[in-house]
Length: 233
Image (cartoon, rainbow, N blue to C red; front, top):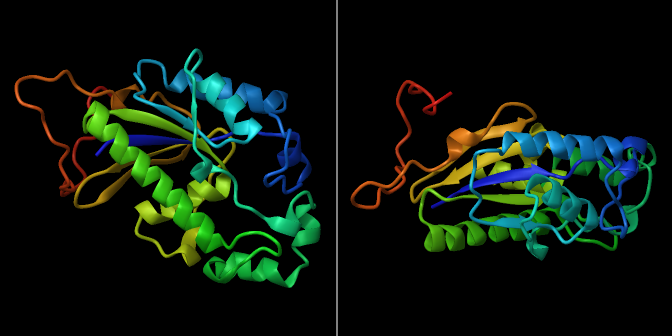
């Protein structure tokens, strides 16, 4: 299978002001968010991306353009923000007083947003979208292909939780900051989380080595003792 770089969109005015933007239309990156995305783009220098895929929401498509200039991102609705329903557009400090807030924090698998979707539904469609896209990329470009998916905080947290073998009820332990990059490599036997919530350092070591002879398959084996790390770092 391939390797996916999960990028959260850069900061927005809603993020900075403590408002749950959700699927609100027209939410764009603020100045700081554009700076964050530009800095993240520098971390991808030296990588050839087999595909760039984005949530349909404006802030993600903006981020995708900054991360991969000149590349037309494919929009995938499976990567869109959780449908927070009636919570959309409200201040987080107000939502924290709602009884549902405690459920979202402690047992997200049981949480359904009024007029929206459940967190379990969000997780299932996001994980399914990423795994399906990863298989498509690997089938077209090979097991050592690297691709980029630009999405939202809770969506990426759900994908990382799945990759780590965590129950959804533990996904609040995962942190995904604006414009952070997380890296997941899927293999036939297990999934490897190579990077989580990183905001510095080049990722060019993810580039596939030149092919020699027969096509080399990605190993599903974990390195006992931790290994020597990626080459060239």
